[in-house]
Amino acid sequence: MTQATATDLSNTEKWQNLDGAHHLHPFTNPNDLLQKPPRIIESAQGVYLTDSDGNELLDMMAGLWCVNMGYGQEDLIEAASAQIRQLPYYNAFFKTSTPPAAELSALLAEVTPAHMRHAFFTSSGSEANDTVLRLVWRYWDILGKPEKRVVISRKNAYHGSTIASSSLGGMEDMHKQGGVIPDIVHVEQPNWFARRCELGTDLDRDGFGRQVAQSIADKIEELGVDRVAAFIAEPIQGAGGVIVPPDSYWPEVKKICEHYGILLVADEVICGFGRTGEWFGTDYYALKPDLMPIAKGLSSGYLPIGGVMVADKIMDVLINQGGEFNHGYTYSGHPVCAAVAIANIRLMQRENIVQTVRESTAPYLQKRLRELGEHPLVGEVRGVGMLGALELVRNKENFIKFDKDIGVGAICRDYCFANNLVMRAVGDSMIISPPLILQHGDIDVFIERAWQCLDLTQKAIA
Ligand code: PXG
Image (tube, rainbow, N blue to C red):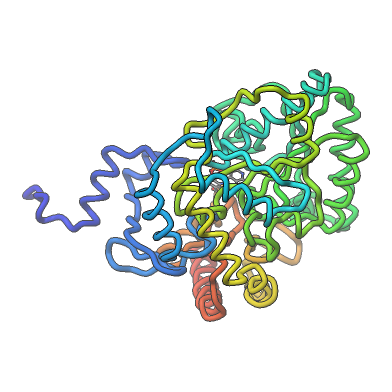
């Protein structure tokens, strides 16, 4: 057999070879990639990706929950190139700022809840959550309560991949490889369907929601309120499997945080910027958080930028009693990233995208998604706005899940990928988080491909 020379190889093979030899991928078993090289995504437009062999894939994950305004938006591209020419970088450390950083902070004050008028900038959601920890601890320290350090989070939460943010998260597999830093504890997640399957008996949804909320109060009592600083949660858990809490959950959690006087941190990295059909998940659930980490949809993923919205209550303490806040990143308020975020938010406003999602596309997506609930493999359909999940089960009448070893979610995901549909698997939940610009016709394509892939999955495991 003659050895293939570089000129014999297709572009796809060339990139796959380079990647295989040199690229260590996030959240990936490197050995798996050697067996099956990655698909190379080369370009994208609207809601479709094009791979290096010319196949077009419908991207129902908006990249990684972030390309909210879809691919190829000229406004964002222009904003980046104009700003990079004008001023590619300057910092916000030593009593300086830049026009984009100043303007973006004001624009964020306009679109986020009224009691949040300051933004701290980061380059990612993980850095935003590290900043959350610093702010929470700093706040109580300034108020003379340094022993208030414990942050309560939830199992299966995802708050990032740095050591601090993964500790805040509740992903066991991450904790196994990195541990959990002190003063972070995890309580039950409001995953009604999983508990219903475990119990094998009926389980009242709202009763369960209240009971899970109560576990936060129980944890505060157990630790002593003098030690508890904050509760952090995604309004709807994303990477944990699009876990939409029972309606009873958030009102109860809100009451508990108010009753004990602990800070409420709403991680809006996924739920923010229109995903729920409101600007923020906090608007959807009528919450009043003290801190709000943001990222992803802030720039529609075009450039890396995140941040933390800070409530006036915390700013008052920082301004009047705080002194220097010893925290910051080289790229905090990066002018090019900020310029793109401004262009993105202005585009969202101009196109009225949040209203379109709320009144038109999300209701249609949710209605059609529920049709997939008729498929024999689908035990539950859940979703809000442009977030959705299909729970694959062995027996839908009796709420019996598949054996974990079968990996039915991964099988289905691979069929989707092979059939030009990007839908993710979290365990046996098939999840979607498409660009907000998705149209009715795209939703029809999605439903048709998804049904076909569910059929293929069913045949494969029969
Ligand atoms: N908070 C939430 C709620 C997130 O979903 C982060 C923080 C961290 O953001 P950065 O920008 O540091 O990644 C996230 C990120 C997945 C997946 O597999 C989800 C995320 C990131 C990577 C993979 O669903 N969410």
